[in-house]
Image (tube, rainbow, N blue to C red; front, top):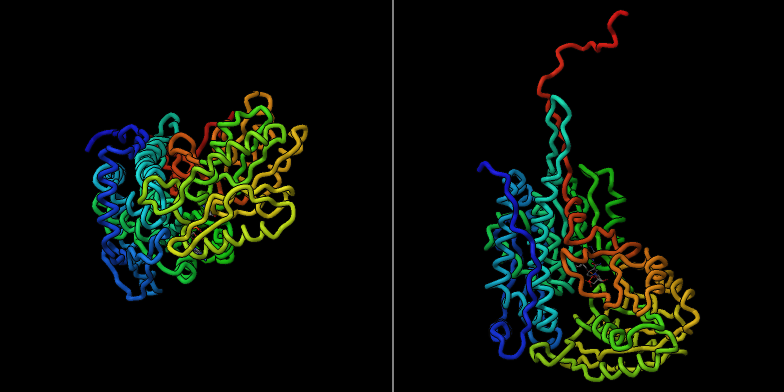
Length: 542
Ligand code: NAD
């Protein structure tokens, strides 16, 4: 085809309401009933083929842990090696496909997800990861559709980035994929991230081995089905759930490791980076290491803050999806002058929150992801209970008899260096520190230096000067900074997401900055009338 084409202009997928009587609500409820009523078997997908190893584990509903949704097969060393070979075979073709055809696969995947697969992936995310209908909609539907549509647009933008040509020459840039495979390691908490990490490199002509989180295999498997249906060639993305340690041992030791695309905890990313560092001389190229990791995200209120807006941000930012968002507000700083009103308003809202099975749409919160998370989070609550200078203002209660339920817990902390103010808890526990209003300057230093992380943060003020001050003083304290809004809910194409310090490499998922990490450009100079002799004019006799 002789054309300079453009991918369809990107737009954000509208968020459906799921209000009573809406067609999407009826469709979603039907999918929930159907899918909860069956137990599926999830194979590995290697070179487009289903592979069963017999070494299996189960995925259950976090809000009803006796209910098995799926049995999934786990990859062993042989399957990991097969997947490497399948990706190598696939790359020979895939890297040479016209870029329009490559990107069309993901445009089509976005369309399939926006229509027929929308209730399926949302229901899978609700059942397997305990998200409410709204939390599933903004993640597994809208964010993943946005990743696929916007990233194809960014890919086109990168390809059209071309150098100037001097007289008598034609310069070009060939934005090659990396030489080797990308290892995509994804977290449980966002289905969209599961879909984004292997596909962003694949769009640029790379091949990926995708190790999903064991707690999200169920929804992530449906993403593979969508990609296959959209025409993704066999072997471009290989789906290999399993034990992360042994899988990583093989992949990180391979000469063809070209990149790691990771989202998860800081500790795991440190391990991956360290392993790559130790083996750096053994690779064909320097592997690209892209990792978005933990957070301890703040809300800083100034004395001029709007109390209702602040309390709403605390409740939504802290407790939606049970506080299991990397961006969740988990430390809040409120001046003493407005504290009584903020406390009353926040506790009033918290006492209206229902926690329970996400299939009951009246619930604002579901369960935390698994037993390990439940024990860790309740351990923090227990420690708070036993410590001096801590008051549990709301919640603190939990019940794991049917599901891993923890009530929204608001903890007032006197010492701003107490562990709940510094460590990532990743659950519905929010620590709050009341500071003397006159200490505004000092408290900004505490916000900045209080944790090793720098992911998201918010400042609330109705006056401009404190906003200017916080913007400047907290410039490196968050990669996503919010003014008079909660620190969660970044939208692809609008607020590119990622943080610095211990929160990651800040390569901004769903932006051109992330996509450029998956290419290794080749500059081509073609001389139209090549020189015919080695001599230069300056060499002539006087
Ligand atoms: P996790 O670190 O436990 O797991 C993430 C992935 O790493 C999983 O697939 C897991 O199986 C794998 N893994 C674990 N040990 C490994 C090893 N030794 N080698 C290779 N892979 C290994 O994280 P999680 O509980 O799934 O997700 C929550 C964490 O993710 C939180 O810390 C949260 O802040 C972070 N997160 C960050 C962002 C961001 O954009 N910054 C987004 C979402 C989640």
